[in-house]
Each structure stands twice: as structure tokens, then as C-alpha cells.
Length: 114
Image 1 (cartoon, rainbow, N blue to C red):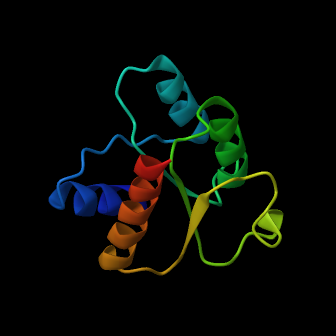
Image 2: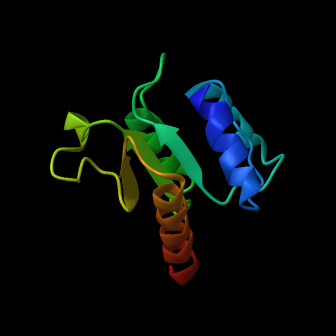
């Protein structure tokens, strides 16, 4: 349900959105290159694989791809923000659509400057 709400909100603001039911599905889609991906937005808590592990795998294969992780609390796996994850944005739930858009635009802007 949250995925559908986020998708609608982002599409309403002009983003093209591809969503995945799992981290493995997202990794498979990224690997296929079927659609260009400008940013990955993931929850930290997911069944099967955490968003932290997804972010680590994305970083290994696509080091410049902007990543945003969402959670209700700071993930302990990130410690003080390190854990081998470079330039991963964090969005604390609950957040407003405006906060999501600002975080996305900042992440996309940082990627464009790199």
C-alpha cells in the first residue's frame, strides 16, 4: 500500500516510477538495463533482504546511482552513517510529500554534480 501511495505521489509530480515487490526484483531490473534508473528509493525494513543490504549491492554495481533509504528510526547497521555506504540519503518516517521530493531532488542533484 505504501509503495502505491508513493508511486502515485511521485507520478503526480512528473517522475516516471518503476516499483519492485522485493529487493531481489529491484536488483534484477537494475541488472537487466531494461529501463534507465536515476534513483533508488527503498525502505530499510523489507522481507528477505534489508534496504541496507540492497544499498550495499547497488553500490557495488552502480556506485554513482543515488540511493535513499526510508525508516522510522536510524538503522543501527549504519552506525554513525558509515558502514561502507557512500552518499546514501536517509528519510525518516513519517515524512511529507514535500520532504520526499526535496530529498530526491537533492540526491539527484548530487549525482549530477559527481
